[in-house]
Image 1 (tube, one colour):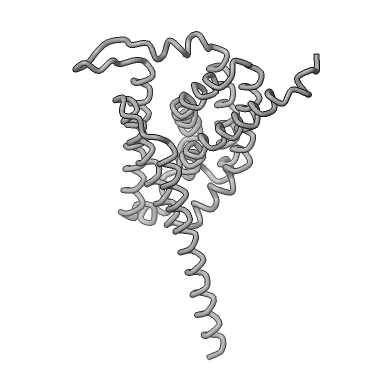
Image 2 (spheres, helix red, strand yellow; image 1 turned 60 degrees about the horizontal axis):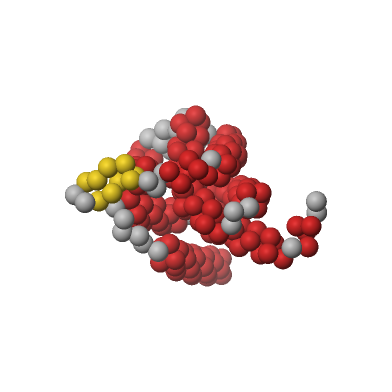
Length: 246
């Protein structure tokens, strides 16, 4: 019964899948941080964890419905010689939603609506949960299909998803707090959502953009922003020290 414990192939598959699920969940964490920002502060963490918890059941359900999942890629109809499947429709809808959401948030930030409205209108708790679940379905399609392509062992796939969601639950709050306390990183996060939205639309049109390019762009931009924040803190500390000396 416990022969799997000594099987290196099972452990290798679990570690690889878990790593991929965590990496593919980066965009989900960014969206989660943005969408829960306007939820009442005393319910923000609950919204994040409840949304991710429900999303976990959604991902496990996708894995359990492997036959249904494979049918998502079957062509439904053609448009200008382009075969359209349910997967394409879901990716297109998710990509357009991300583009609209990110553009709306950028407009809100740049126009100063938050300051004028005294902190902005609080978002509905239920609406935030629904949006988290909807976009997680879009984000999870690729990761679940990747899992199916790497192994046919359902328990391993489920374990990898559970571990990845657990890591996301742990990381969501500190990332959300960091974005909220640093306005420039929020704008950067919104730019990432625009980038991911364009990639989803491109995938729906059968123009695949390797995710490695996106993650490299995100990592490089984040590194530059962290260096800018570090330089800003040093300048601020030096200015405070000079003012104290005077």
